Amino acid sequence: MPMPDFKTYDDNNIFAMILRGEIPNKTVYEDDFALAFHDINPQAPVHVLVIPKGKYISMADFTANADDAEIAGFMRAVGKTAEILDLPDPGYRLLANHGPHSHQEVPHLHVHIFGGKHVGPLLMRGWEGKIKMPNMD
Ligand code: AMP
Image (cartoon, rainbow, N blue to C red; front, side):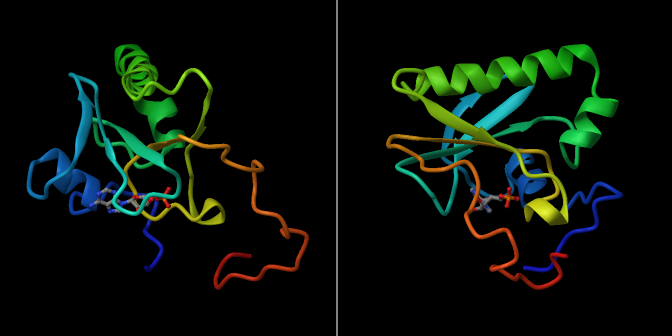
């Protein structure tokens, strides 16, 4: 998948289309600030994405430009979604990719929630130069 341009919001990104109801999703939770839905390609027994309703490209864009109500509402939605999924005990991982170095593919802010098993070490091993990915320097 080609890397998106992270400078301007793309109204045709896949999560914008989900928010407009143009393509389906498996919703876990929704309120005025956020939508949470199952990832189409799960990397853990539970893998859910939480996205803000507003047009924000990434965490940097969101934290710089969203108002306090949007930020509070979004963070509460992340916590509420984890509760609905029964994850707080024994635990879960949150992850938000930002930009090319993180391999963010969809240019609408999303927080991944992973759970349902031990989810392993925090980062992929081998970053010390053993693993090369195209256009990732
Ligand atoms: P990231 O690499 O952080 O940008 O993650 C993008 C995530 O979006 C990946 O885990 C994809 O599997 C997921 N994804 C892409 N399209 C869809 C979709 N239509 N419904 C649900 N998840 C999707």
